Image 1 (tube, rainbow, N blue to C red):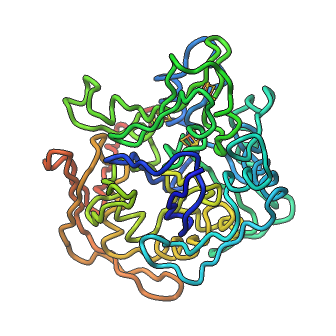
Image 2 (tube, rainbow, N blue to C red):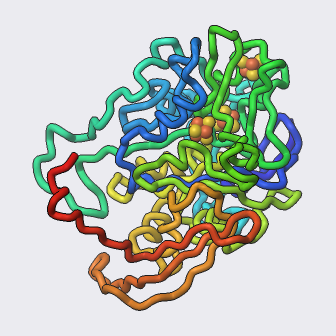
Length: 414
Ligand code: SF4
Ligand code: SF4
Ligand code: F3S
């Protein structure tokens, strides 16, 4: 085991391989608050990559209803229970957050790698192999809320008594992937150019250690080929080699298809030591590192996942803190009362399929003043401009959206 630095935990941790970081890292932000659970992303992925024999149970992208739903069933509850059984108390010291290398404070518990080593498990990480039954019904408990029977009254923010939310899930293309560490054949690798994690189908022999040890359960076994497969981050689009892209890096299918405009995906530049190069005008850097409005999913597992979530503001905070770590309260506060710049950058979500490498904001007039938590907040009609990998403008969106009225003769046309 090597010592590596995990900034999401604010400390070093043990991992099978020494640090080796890509030039760019695939990353995405999902805004849970805006997801309508339409599953367009799920079907965009399914119809692109997993429509063949032996892939019937595979959903590289899935959207599950929390807290009861999960694909495979109860994946997170089962792993949390396993980890807590071996290493009780996944606690954080959030008393000194702030620095770029420890923005959420310091994780005091053990990761899946550390707990496996201390418990002298034969595996690299704490994990389990889901049963065939658990891979069925990808959207089990859809729209099932907590407290449905008991709550009849309208609820108000900051938390609702009756609640559920949609959790959008793909492979996190982790910085320290458990799947890579798990594979006895070294069949899984992280690409040096963009950090995308892929399974080499020639090397894979179907040992399924990746399925067992990925905490997010994103590698899936294919009986027809006796190999495992996983989300490939639509790498031909991301690298700009898809014929449609004209050489420009493009967002993955699940991102580009998102009807709710909840997804923004891109690439962040990495320094050799694994830190993110300070790029305050890269939209992902801005949202994740500057505003800290988007957080990693279960950072305590220790893989340093690269998909980030804007947490749902109506959900009880203890549940969210377990899921996204101690940065939850600050992230929700930043989202409920967004800075002027954040208001503009939030408009970039799903505004173009081309990956935005840099943004600029042109200030406009004040258009409204609203009350948030009893305090006034001004809204401005600023314009956010996105630039592609070659520095050319590809999108321009204003905070105030244009309004189209359907002509009277089409009112009932469907
Ligand atoms: Fe590997 Fe799982 Fe991380 Fe994806 S989410 S890189 S499959 S450990
Ligand atoms: Fe599927 Fe591509 Fe989304 Fe991965 S990134 S879940 S391969 S659509
Ligand atoms: Fe390795 Fe997973 Fe294949 S453990 S051999 S990549 S099934």
